Length: 464
Image (cartoon, rainbow, N blue to C red; front, side, top):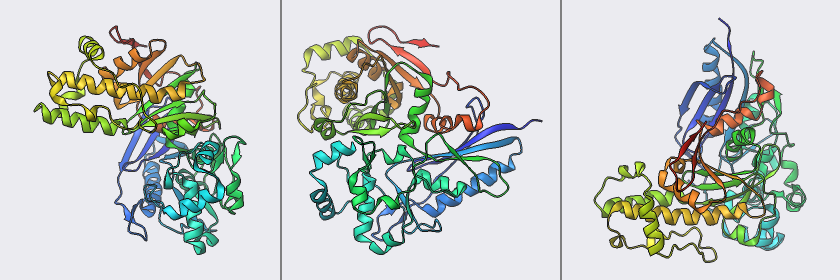
């Protein structure tokens, strides 16, 4: 029986570490999920267990090789961003894998911005809101000044996807999808590393850039598969849409965060946009992706719980609330919709301030919650729509399955086509697609994403 050509994709989130095998039609033919206990750094802050992660790569591949029905052609990696592995000449990690949520020393932040210009100007140049350790370049700055002996031994600082790639390729490289994402390392005006990186002697500590769609030979014993350079997960999740659609679009990716991504908008970030949590990602071909973020998913969970408690309901019922245009219309005409914002106030909840006694029942309160969330969402999404003609909005993740959210979003954008998009494991599929030519003998697929159209006033209909 002929073997099935496959690619292995390691999709590493903060909680779940997943391995997928995809066949040439991008169907999952094998999967495995693991969770590791966190360890602690020298300050007793929780962090990823890099040893467990490293060993899991080799253990997982050995398991794949036991399945004789598969012919492993390639391996690639996507992981969360803002995380460096500091390695010496031999590729051995010199420190724990510090958590990007670790507090950044205020005095070191002041020292940095005193030396390299005011925060707003620097944020515009690097398309990076001031985010402490989430600006991974500042982690390197911190290492230099707080652990100079380690900095001296440092061969390269590898973002996590590239460290995992190194384990199989033996080559230390950097990738623009990681370097270009709110790291404070990249100057989007000059399309090169920012001057401070050179001034601080950090540039030699960054491995040579490798194209995100290129591959390297494996050094895994007895193997012939090739190895991708790895991708930042947010950039990987965009790839199936870039492959599938040519017309300009915005992708609203929803989960704990709701991130609006516009890969067709290259206008520079303004001070107002940066203040309201806009930033640039980098897509795998090297072009900037303007993005805006809201903490919507978390806010939704908190307020749904408040509604359920107040009306003595089980919160599970709100997973399947149908949109009621009469309720939405009544609330819209009765209430000022709070679709204005104060400076820096976009992330603050409007619904949190509402008195639940003002609503006749829980479904009415739920519709008001979704009206408030969609008003915030439209403000956030408008930041990435400005200056760029877009015809479609795609929504994926949790809110794509929410009838009330989708209808209200369609009402907010009557001039655009609004779709709920559905595909299994978009990040992992995007990671495989990035190196399609290196492992797959078939043409790029164009039926990866299932769409459902919302007009806001008509019943949703299936788009085939």
